[in-house]
Image (cartoon, rainbow, N blue to C red):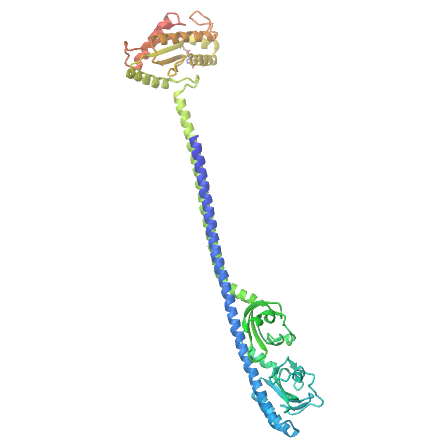
Length: 514
Ligand SMILES: Nc1nc2c(ncn2[C@@H]2O[C@H](COP(=O)(O)OP(=O)(O)OP(=O)(O)O)[C@@H](O)[C@H]2O)c(=O)[nH]1
């Protein structure tokens, strides 16, 4: 029972060790995943932040470049306008003005050409000299603008196709006034779109990244990569115009591009002098691919680390399981050995046929009882009991019947009214003995008599019993060790009882003798 409890306790404590190991493993794996997840997430945030910074710088660089480009054109237009104010627009001045426009056009690489139109939109002078007949520009957006706006600032319009050269150009125009302030006409400088193509081409950009120059109303003037259908497209519904520019003239943000729906990291910047906006956008997908390719070795190493931890954990768990199994087997073996040992001890002290104490136990107990009787100065009695004519019983009824008879006699002896410390033993063969510690003559005689009567009362038929009755009987030899007749050894006590038994046999059996 105690061994079982021990086994259960050992088993449960091993189970908890296994559970602890699993929890420890899970904790390590979780911590590794969390730390690396955080590092990876952090690295991605830094990639985005760096892209935002780059995009912002790029948009500001584009903004400065655009500002320089249009400022040069602006100053040129202002200069020519001042001269026109001085010399007028008479036919006589056309030659001079043509030369002037021509020289200014050739000194600015961004210019496609310059032209002066009268108040009806008719061409007066162009930098190219020859004026195509019956061409009128009053239908142009910039013409209508200046007609209705009296301010003297340059106006940058949407991209148009030049009627003189057929090129795509950005019109930069200035209103010319008469001395009374009324509308006199327009001075126009057309900026080549191809100029921006060249300048924006200098930047080293990935395939899906964009650069754009736009009017502040959301009209695209130029975009890289160049797509003709995107020119003059209005993207005022993009977050850039609906929110961002309303809050700050420059900055960064991540949003879906209005052009192709791709999510990009944008930097944007509004020009200070002109109603223009520049933007640079890095494709988020491309950024992620680049980021991931630099991180893939790290991720692979982390995965290997996790696998190693997992495998080591499995190995330790297996080891623990094996240990548990071995421990349980050892406990089971120990329990079996303990049980076997107990059986062996029992077998060594108990008679196999009758279940009574055997000769070995009889000897040990007799020695112990003799010692105790000496020590406590108490009497000790011994009964030697022998079945009468048992050879004849075996011969008549067979050996198995003899065994059965011995068992019944043993049972009857056990069930006599004994003191608790009496010992009934099978002394050998058909001979039994009863040790009575503290038993005096009177007690021993009474028990001996009860033995004879009890066996007789079993009424086991025995036709050839030489005692005269035809049932099984026993003879009893009794010897008592008292204060008066000190017997010094177990052997002496046995010899005394044996002698008495001999007397009982000789006196006709089925009786008690002392
Ligand atoms: N069936 C059986 N017989 C046993 C056992 N042990 C001893 N015997 C027999 O007991 C008999 C004892 O015979 P004897 O010693 O000649 O004595 P007895 O025939 O009883 O004669 P008395 O003792 O003079 O009455 C022998 O035949 C033994 O074989 C046993 O365990 N079983």
